[in-house]
Length: 313
Image (cartoon, rainbow, N blue to C red; front, side, top):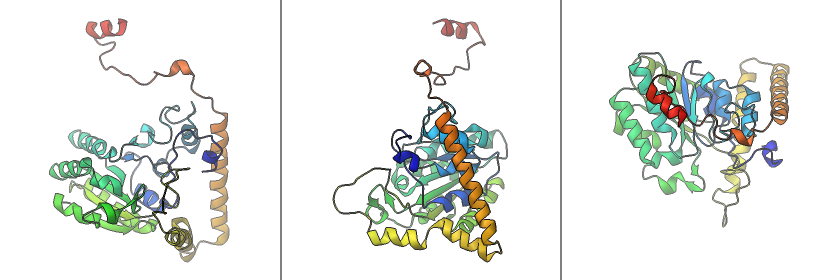
C-alpha cells in the first residue's frame, strides 16, 4: 500500500488486506505441483502459493525483474514455477481457466488439483454456473473458493443475490457447499484440506465460501460518490475485532508460542518485504522495443515448411 501511495505501482491497485486468512488457509492445503487461478485482487495469493517476494514486488511495479517481466502488473499475475496459471481483472474470468487446467490434469492422469479464487460478485456471472456444472459433470479435481467480502465494489450481497447463502448454490450442481469463517486461517485450511482430499480421490469439485472482509476500498484511491456504502462502524469493527493476522497471533500464543518467537517471525517478514521493495526499485523498466515480446508463440515454428513460411512472413 505504501508503494502505491508513493506512485510506484502503476494502474489500479486492489489490496487484499483483511482477507489474508482465506488466502493462506486455502493455499496451505495445496502441494507445489497444484495449480491456482486468482482475481484482480490476488496480490497475497502468489505469496500463499510460494512465489518469490522479490519478483512479485517487481511485477507490481511493472519492472523487468517481475514474475511476468513487468507485463502482468498487479491484476494479471502468473507464475508457472509455483502453479499460478492466471490472475485476471475480468470478474469470473478465472473460473473457466481453472476448469481447463483441471480437465487437462484429468485426461493426462496426473495428481494435480486446481484451486480457483473468485469473489462474491463473480457468483452472478454465467462463467460461475457453467464452470460448476462442467466440473461436477466430469468430476474434475477443482476447488472453487469464493472470497465473500460482502461487496462487489459497492453493491452488497443482499442487494444482488436472490440467494445470499452462496454455499447453497453448490447443491444445484451436485457438489458439496461449505461456508467457513474467512478470518480464521485454521478453519479455512480445514475446509480446503477436505476439498483437496476429495479432489485427489476422484470425488469431484467442492465449493467453499470463505466469509471475509476487505479493510480498504475496492481499489486504492477510489472515491465512490454519495453516502458510504459500508457503515463506518462495520469497517471499524472488522479492523478491531476480526483482523485475521491478529486473530491468528492470538491462536499461536494459545498454542504455546512466545511473544519473542512471534516478534522474531514479524522481524523476518519485515526484512523480507524491505528486501523485495529494494529489489523492485533497482530493477529496470522493460524497454519499449520489447513491447511485443512474449505475446505470441507458434507451436508450428521450426517443425515444417509451412511454419517456416509463417516465420519468414
